[in-house]
Length: 330
Image 1 (cartoon, rainbow, N blue to C red):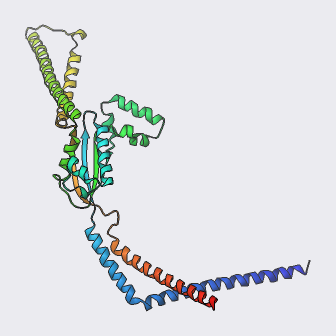
Image 2 (tube, helix red, strand yellow):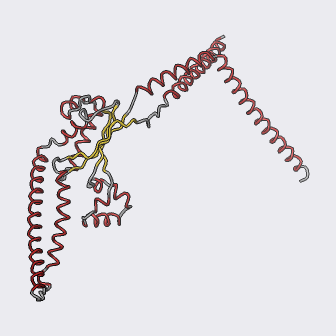
Image 3 (cartoon, helix red, strand yellow):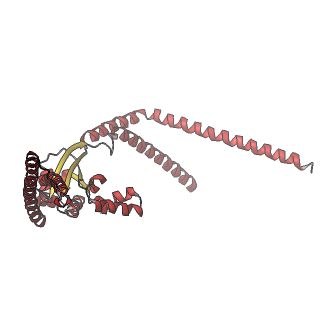
């Protein structure tokens, strides 16, 4: 028993000594590597400086010339044309991806189709507008929220496509104007014969509804004026005039209030009903620097130096292996 304990201590001392020796040799290798790296850059300082200047110049040129602009067009699709609108935007995006400039120029009407790099459409989430005066929409969201998260329900395609406003976003590699892109795009989106006829019919129906509501409001005013005159005459004659619930006076007043509110909404609708896809607002030529954030001037010098070091290591490896090969032949 007593002879094994010193032996174990001796083995532990050897292990600790070997570990400290390994650690020391590891740091020595790091120091050698750092020294050789510094020596390499000092020896090749002219080439390194040349690569840095070349990278800065090329990066600056690309940063200043390769621009990307974000453009947004807010629209509202009328007469149930939401799916039609999304399918048209998807078609344009597929033509852009395929490089079909003939379609983009002759069919869509873009003056310079190569400037448009991407286009997409997304709904503007406005749940309050979605459920405003629409009890069935409110009940629909409640029902869908019971089986899933509210956020997912609001972002779901079935729900989101029924929002009032939608954003058409497209990326261009140079500045554009409305006449070159926005006007042709809207003209193309409103070129459907079916929706054009539907728009004319809906527009006339809404005009007639406004006229009829004005007539009904005028008739209600006459009834209310007649009641007011009757009350005044009755008070002059020192007689009391009683109106019971059967006169439905309260219902007449509520009907007038409803029609006035409805007329206000109808006149707002009339402003948007002149087109199937109605433009609300266009924001063009937002300088997009998210992709590179003007970092080419910093990335290229690093990239060139990395390639130079890689080539040097490859040459060193090749020469070493070549010497081994020649030595083996001798």
